[in-house]
Image 1 (tube, rainbow, N blue to C red):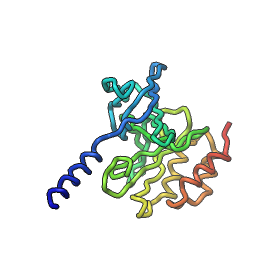
Image 2: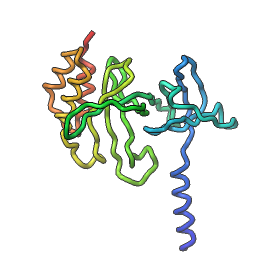
Image 3: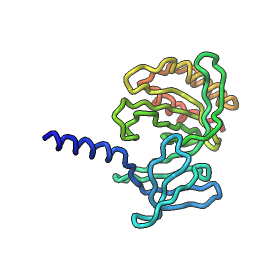
Image 4: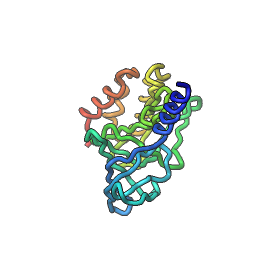
Amino acid sequence: MKKLIIILFVLLFSTAGHAKFYKAVLYLTDGTQKTGLAKLVEEDDSKVTFKINEDSDTEKIASADLIKIIYTNESGSIFTMEYLYLTSANAFSGKFSNSRKKRWFDIVYNKEYKIGKIFDKGDSRRNTFRLSSSSYFFGKKGTDHLVYGYNTMGNAVKSYGTDATMKKMAKQEFTDCPKISKAIENETFELDTVLNRITAIFDKTKCK
């Protein structure tokens, strides 16, 4: 019985650590596309594992050579990962800073404006056994960056300063669109509803 438990334990962790391939279309910076199978990228991956089909050899493609990846999972759901810079603010000084390298974002909203999610350490998408924690970023479509909005804090702890952070970062990002800044300034954001509220603002507020 003890041996069986050990075997099951080893199998469980070996399965969790084995990343799957998904149907994917890779959009490269030179304007070309690659269609085939790719492993799901994580936030700081510098390379993407790709192959044309199940029987072909794998290749590593530099993230710097990519703009985005569109994946299709087993159920047919489609989701997009984009390679972008991020802008954040220091919690103590309030000073804004831009990342020196790009990150992979899961794009959860993409119209005139954009909202991206980063799967932080412990998110279920990473096949770990820790509490999930994800950060959300927003910005204008067509730019090479997104600004920090809020963190889910494991879906259990209320994010400190969600309301104030959203308003501060909106002023930074939407200086050329007072309508958006004002709409966000007039809103009260709480962690449970912040994603719905910000998408509602983006849906009904146009700058063009």
